[in-house]
Length: 402
Image (tube, rainbow, N blue to C red; front, side):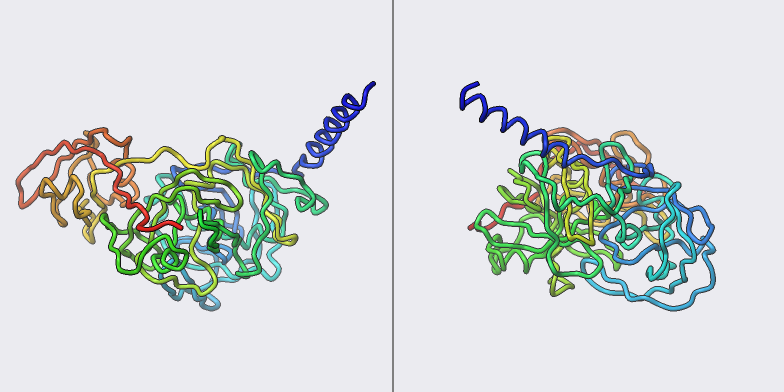
């Protein structure tokens, strides 16, 4: 055997060792369901069965509808979302199970009594939210590929795993945030942002205008061409989409992705926003919060989905349950044909909307491939109007990129 053969054999042996080191068998698994942009898991909280949207951006334990009797409120908690804070009553958690996995509730934050519109939001039965605190003390896998949680023995140490930085990536949590998974995102010019891994964010990634100005991706005096609204826990907020190229998200190179930009300053001095479902569903994720590591396996081979077009309408139910046009993006196809805020939306591509339709449901119906057509039936002052509009990419380009 020559020296070259020995060298090749050593490379093969080393590769096999690395491959073996990166494999671990979960001690238990818990299935979940994938909604269009969320994870829904069945749980038992204080002996009551509930279905919960899993949200790593939610630092508390559980939030459920007040229709679920978890017990008498024992306190209050201050919650924070992308734009503000608000108060909610809380209940002590005495027991919690995910499938066959019993979760240790010692020192777990109390459950929050909150919103009751989750089923309409996600298109499948949902009683509330399960936050990051529920899995925080476990080595936990979030397998989008297999639609399940994977709980690993404490002896599994992903900090020793070796990524290839093409399909697998090992990320280190930053020393910010006490109940979130905050990691670095890098611009093409090498500037850093701090964004949290957020399974509860339906968008690709979300940040703020002032953050973009800080890292040189937007000029303070510039205005976006297309503006719309996003809906967060504390209410609607002006936002716009921005197409960013050659970013590096948690160490993963991303040729292009469309970000959601909140047109308000960040509500946190430490965090710059979150990376959401649009990015994360392409990965199998293992979180080891104790060792401050996150493992990403890019099983789809993509870091962003194909860009979608839309006609420029934000719609949803008003206070009476009627489906209305809530906002029209200036300069969009809908704006150019004269569709107005307050118009009643009757149908989209032949689908009757009826009453009590959420903005998420309307958005999904409006979206499609860029250049495709969408047919709308709209009523204004009792008069029926029909439109066929082109779906276009209503995203802005960075004013300057370093």
